[in-house]
Length: 272
Length: 98
Image (cartoon, rainbow over all chains, first blue to last red; front, side):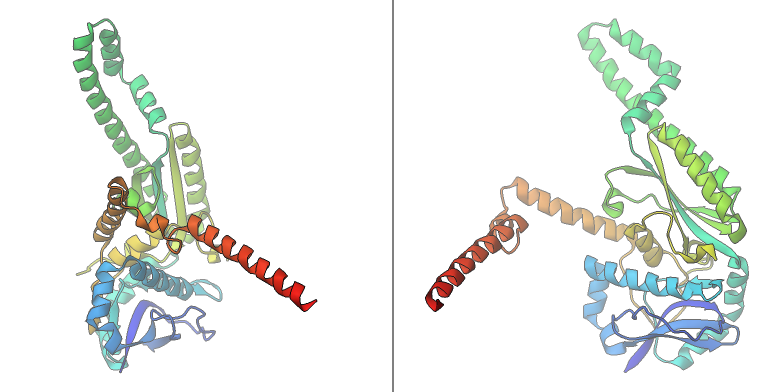
């Protein structure tokens, strides 16, 4: 028996062009079901397969399976976002929501109708942009922090005139102080930038700092954030990002941005 | 519309997709919800994977590097040798046909 895998709910479109992306099982076609003013983007999946222990196991353990399926999920939503005359408002779903049949799906759409409409109203005409800042050159940043910090400078001078044994302890202490100051400065700076960019956006949210294992980068991530930006402000937002990145370069930092993303970070209010 | 090109500005990181699809997005009550690893569990799993390879190398366990089918360098060499051997055989056969 087949079930329905749900990717996103979007504002009803007159779009009949169909999807190019294949469904979550890699085979089936994507199609939509219209319910009142909402359109659910779905594909059929084998219930037997997707409720199997094998899949449940893969979903927690198999890195390649997770990556492959997450990318399909994202690709379908991105395609659903791309309408004939610009971006369509979509509410992206978390991975892995399946309905047994159309009746069940429609019932849920009916029950959550007001909430969905509210979310669509909130994101209408806006786009999610991702901003990440990385520490590229920690030595340069550390040097900058040291130069600004009177206390550290004095201690370094003091240390130079100390006997070796004492200087050793002083050095250890100083290392710790510098490390703390560097972290403090990184925090203050990312907070400021987050606040500054937030002024250009309708909404903003700080997301989890990702570890190197996740980013695949050797550099440390110091800010991870998402911004919901009005479509007509996107150009000036991007300009602000480029300007900030230019400033950051001198300090050994680098800003990366991408978008427009499906508004994952601004539609999960009231999540379970 | 200019924004139709998705993520045109800079290369998209897989991490951007994973952190959204696995951890964010709305959860509505379906009949079935596949429980997938979240970003933290995924990070730990990748870390363990990397650690185990590094640890194995450290302990001198590196059999996969000797296995021509698992190690790229050796594999290339094996293919090269095989090609050479086949070319020789073709030459011999051609000589016979003439």
